[in-house]
Length: 194
Image 1 (cartoon, rainbow, N blue to C red):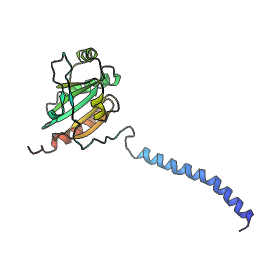
Image 2: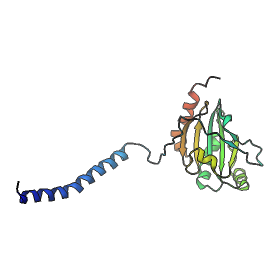
Image 3: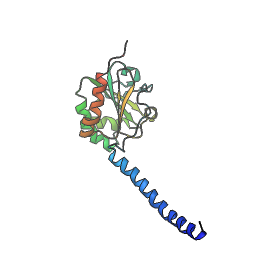
Image 4: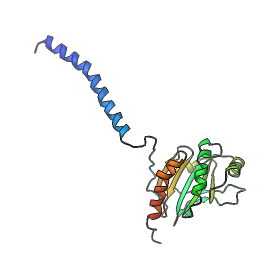
């Protein structure tokens, strides 16, 4: 091979390399797009693990208990992390009110970095779907639960293990297609031995 024939080949390679790289990246993006996987879904490292040890005081003035993780045992618990200053929390609230009518589950709220007066006003204006409300004034419990932002919703099984995490506000679609099927799975699971 002479120097003259090697030069055009290396030029061709330099031209084809970016084109080939573009097609490889385009194929990867296309595979992700058609995979059907929700790219907004943020997996939680806590799924399948025991719920973090949580002891939160009650929201004063509501007459409701706070949150104790020991209270999760023996029942399916849905824990919703919310705040009065959170716009999407207002959007999801009607769906929580509907969910609260399901007597098979215990719906509890973790009030995140909120002013107590504002939280009480929020519940007074929109209704209170919760059976217990724990105040996470500093946000430490939310960190232990792996919360990225409010609202977030967790399903905790009868054995006290986190089974599912929903990031963002609940909608009619996410409630029907995602959260309720996870709750049904949790309810169908055998109760842990005493």
